[in-house]
Image (tube, rainbow, N blue to C red):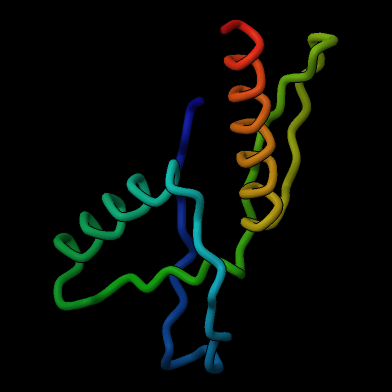
Length: 98
């Protein structure tokens, strides 16, 4: 899976207060995003990057069994659902092999 991380930076000086989030990224993305966040904060001291998982959009490319590849622009929550379904399918396939 090729992963490209790109953020839109919004300042609390110009943006109304953002919603408080209980939604969290899937653990496969958390490490990648934490690395990006750490790099940003080193390069842009004293600025901090606060991720808001419930807003934004993600471009994903899905490969289907018939060989079709399609791109979608979806919410972070929708991506987490797709990742969870893919993980479940992989686990089921591994169980069938055993």
